Amino acid sequence: VSRSHPHVVVIGAGFGGVRVARGLRGAPVRLTLIDPNNFHTFQPLLYQVATSGLEPGDISFPVRSLLRRDRRARFVMGTVTSIDLSDRSLVVDDDEVVTYDFLVIAAGTVSSSFDIPGVDEWSLPLKTLHDAVTLRDELLTRFERCSRAVLSGDAVDPEALSVIVVGGGPTGVEMAGGLHELLDRVLRKDFPELDVAGAGITLVEAAPRVLTPFDETSSAHAALALRRRGIDVRLGVGVDHVTEESVVLADGTELRAGTIIWAAGVTAHPLVRALGLPLGRGGRVAVQANLALGSHPEVFVIGDLAGEVGGQPALAQVAQPAIQGGVHVAAEIRRALAGEVPRPFRYRDKGSMATIGRNHAIAEFPGGRRFHGRLGWLMWLGLHIVYLIGFRNRATTLVNWGWNYLTYDRSARTLLSRR
Ligand SMILES: Cc1cc2nc3c(=O)[nH]c(=O)nc-3n(C[C@H](O)[C@H](O)[C@H](O)COP(=O)(O)OP(=O)(O)OC[C@H]3O[C@@H](n4cnc5c(N)ncnc54)[C@H](O)[C@@H]3O)c2cc1C
Image (cartoon, rainbow, N blue to C red):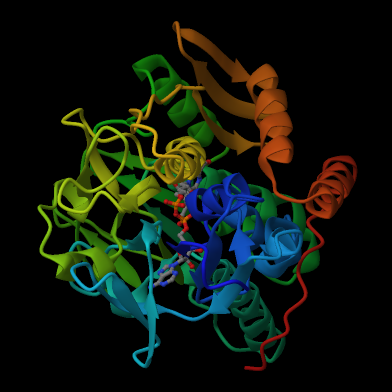
């Protein structure tokens, strides 16, 4: 790799980082992409892995395959532990110093407990592929343990099989819907010795409605669809604390369950906290109109980490702003190298979607077009297939979904961890 080319370092191989790397393919730069994982994760389908609908490999893609065609690009599997903006350098895994000419910070967010007692100790987050596999394993192992207890004549706490999902955003709603399908269609048949029908799924949301980024009619539609599936939807009351086997709400109600899932929110990656930059809501970094830092035009912040853009309100923490931001920043770097002036980032809203389960999703598009039910679900399926990275992933996901749809089964139930 020639040292004469400017060095572009991208932190994070998520939606944003991968688009920067792709956009710089063939550009006169050396590119280094850094991520603690050697794969890119398609986070919108994490709940499918957690509920045994898809295998981890269906929604992840090797980063090295993405860079294979670019001979001036390299991948470093590691965690960026600090950044020195004035020195134009960063540190990987606390020991390797890497210098840059351009830096793109695309490290995304981390799950946040909002300092609510017991959340970190007793609930399971859903933010990474590792989280999704852990959640699936915990859930299935719990059923196996309860089965052994019943078969050996021991009493099983009726709440042991119940699940509470905290957070009524798209993640919580999709998780609750997916759990219902797993319990009702699969585990009820797998474990006839257990009272699976008696296992409750509760969705807790502090706001007065689920899916707050969506229109009120869509929220009402989603809540109704969840309730029709027997899911207990609790709105307008937050969580006070979490214990080993319960969620205690702010009004004093104690909800008991064997599994507690925390899908209530995220906060900006702590990496940016130490940079001394002005941070907005959720710890996000305010950027110039072209997504660069005002104080350091060679540094860009994109995706979930970017806050206000050129003084305009921050964009939603969803995939499209990260994807479009990544494409824009790659073009900005090319422009800077060609001596051209920066151009502002223009976000194109492509709409929002959330699925509740089989044949049921909410889709909203600019201009007030809304689709609920089966049509929304078909759109949801199509778009998720299109945006998955890699032909193999699209093919295996399509086959697995087709199989699940026809057989009402969820076959990704292989437990590999030894307990
Ligand atoms: C469960 C779940 C469901 C979601 N569903 C949807 C949905 O249906 N639709 C939608 O549009 N959006 C959805 N989102 C949001 C969407 O995934 C994010 O908005 C998007 O991933 C943000 O892209 P990003 O590039 O900013 O960060 P990410 O895609 O999160 O990528 C960040 C990358 O940085 C890496 N990284 C972290 N720390 C470091 C470090 N210190 N050093 C180096 N690398 C690091 C991470 O490993 C990761 O690969 C969902 C998110 C979750 C968690």
